[in-house]
Image (tube, rainbow, N blue to C red; front, side):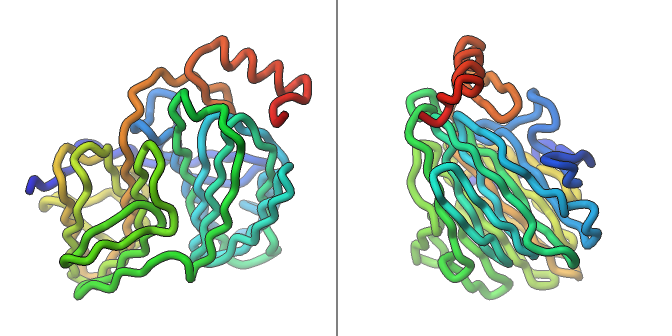
Length: 281
């Protein structure tokens, strides 16, 4: 077994998206700052309504998947397929844009804390034009792995811990995504398998933690080196850490805002489809 160690940290930058929602973006802050197969990782979190109230009105996507994990708050998803999902504390929405989807994500609260993450997961060329889809995952559908020094909430993928194999709420897929929320007790430590073919990163969003004796930066996508297992140790406050991994696609990426394809010509066709009302046809 080979331990994964810290390769580099990508600090999140303050910016805004949608109709003015304040976010912190690590992956995706430029088109050169990615970790195949992941395109973008945004953290949002504020108890100031003016930072989130305008939400994300109807907008299109093509060529990838979005995963929204709500830590606290209430947001409503609606799309052109007729899907409607209430995203609440601990819930996840997994949306496959495929050949095209138009959706909105609007806050259903006028005060209080709204906090969570959105991850963009690329699709290989062979899947970019597949039908769009949506899954609304309730908190009780997410397996919780109870360990001696904390808890793992397994959103996607598979983990074998202490001889028992756990399946996440989402499994399979050509990129084999692994997405877990690690809750470490004060001074607690976890060792988890992360298959060697997968690119992997962690994101510390509460408390303090270290990997291989090196402290994790708060609100940063920390890219990990090669290996087949990961050990995370928390400080005196405990820690909450996202573990995100996936099989690299290894194909060209051409992005124009909410559209992600493999060539410039495909982007131009996507823009024509959108202008002609054919994006979701």
